[in-house]
Image (cartoon, rainbow, N blue to C red; front, top):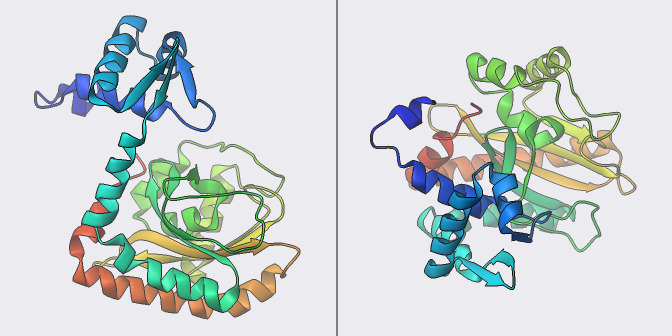
Length: 270
């Protein structure tokens, strides 16, 4: 049992219900009971009770033998956005980046081994990987993920590296612990990361970390665009100063709303 499960205040029933909600994604928009049980690792009986409860609460709908999420689940995400003042903190700097560069601009936090999009301002240009608030990608294959990881405590970095080898998306994806460690140390020296065709082909990006008051990296911002539009070298040269200005603006806003900084810092890679 994990330390949390040994805690007498820990509700395993709540954990199971949340695991059922999280089981639905773009690969599993609708599932039968047996599929929910398989994805979550719950027994069919437990999965059925969770689903029936979520249906009664209005978070899940049943269509014939299939279950699917209802719009009510959006209340969770909107509550975080409004209570943590994300619109005021990060959207204006990201819009400024997009307007000045024509690139997509994003801010993410680290969620386990993934990055989680907190805000995204898209460009009118077609990008291979579409993202929205709440989208997750493996941190090791993204510039923003590595920009956060590089400035985390060494123990947290080693805990992340212990999960190597990482999934390979292209021949440019860093997949070994040694290569990732070297990359992260290089990012520490430079203060930024740039990814070229690492998560998917045709995408180039540059990212910088966002620090809290104690100089811990709690988020990252980036510019990303098509590799046919600009070279990696020109992207870094032209966008890096703008990204650092945007990150500084967000860090200043975080001092006005420290609850958001605390919420982001509370996550870990373990």
